[in-house]
Length: 621
Image (cartoon, rainbow, N blue to C red; front, side, top):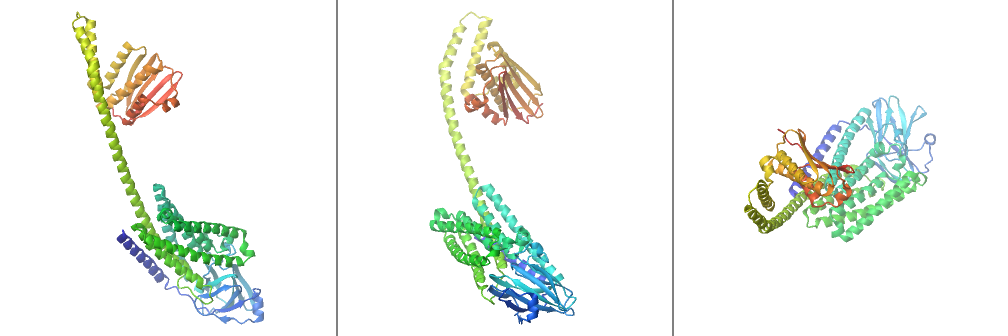
């Protein structure tokens, strides 16, 4: 298993590297255009663009690369100038940070101020000038102009890239990024669906919680990339404050903790770790509900410091969660179960990536610091590695469970076979005992009677009596040895039923009628015997219990099957109480019907009883 997992892991790394190489090669011709940005920090948060122009505020040139101002309580202004002879006419200005509260772009042409647009994460997505996951502003560079960019992200961290693109290059880049996100979504949906199928097939909740974990982690990725606001809650900007990434984290971490409780069997094997994960799980779920209330009520708009408080709480919780993750990894790696050990290795890789991400998030609050890797990109790589490793382990667990279930079914079948053999042995022993009693007691008396009648003067009636005694002797032998009814074997089902009805009409008060319709059924001897015994059982019930005067036996055969009906004009019976108090006769009837794969229908009332046996797919001649 370990060799297969290493091979699969290597293939995933190659696949990720291939996608990264393809994406890098495809976007390499797409170049960011040079832009000279100057920056000014409005510590009063009150300046307007007109005041900025009138006061002649001095803007400071910004260094190239990603801008990080850390935690800020100010509004930040950026200025740049575009000359038409140096730039294409159709340009796009992109602000990569998609969670800035308010973003304004203002153009000044020949002293005239033109507000191009106002958007932001606190405004509906429809206010975006370009429907993309980041802030993108189309710019007409056919005339020279000064542009002022106003970013209001007070009481939060402000870090972003500000890039200038040729519009065609920007659209090309976005299409390729959305294509990769489409692949990501398809893979996640496929794995979630497979785990839900495994859950329904095995009733093992570990698959359900892994599916929930994948869904929560995917939601975190969508929130961190801006796709969540674009596709999930575009008309509810309130969901962007407090940070939806924090809320997604507080949703998916309890799911992975619950998954680990089932997968690693922490309740039985690691009591201390189980209690810790239980407490942390419920605390995070309560926190996510609290965040949802804050978002729906819009508290962050009236108390901007709420975001900073939530972020501080999240930083503390992140350290606690990572500590628990390290604990879980150690427990899994030290386990004697190879499956759990491999899970521990995979989860250790994930935990290392999460630690790196937390360190980056802590550093981003320092002015001028930079990311080593974009958080959502780092977590996406970890996510795919995690997806492959854990999905393989769960699939192996499913195969193992399926194999154990098969072995259990075989054991049960063998046990049932042994039980059936014991029953057969008991029945054989009882049959031999009955056979001995019949031959030693009843047989001797019949023999003595036949001997007595042999010395009486012969007569036709005496001959019939002796023949009847001989027939009784044969029947006793047949019953004792459980042999087939002689009449059925020698004469067939239809003729034997005809003779049976004739004999009954000579000895019973109930008048029986037998009717055969359709073709002659082609049956094996065992099938004919079973049908004969069923009809005999039903006729016996009519004689003993129905208090009937007339009864009808009907045998109908056609291409669809064979229908046996025994009806009478007796007093009927209560089907509910009869099913509840089923005797040996009823049980035998149902058992024989099952052997024939037949359906039994019962109708009973004041006018009598009708019992029909439907046997499908009986060939006719």
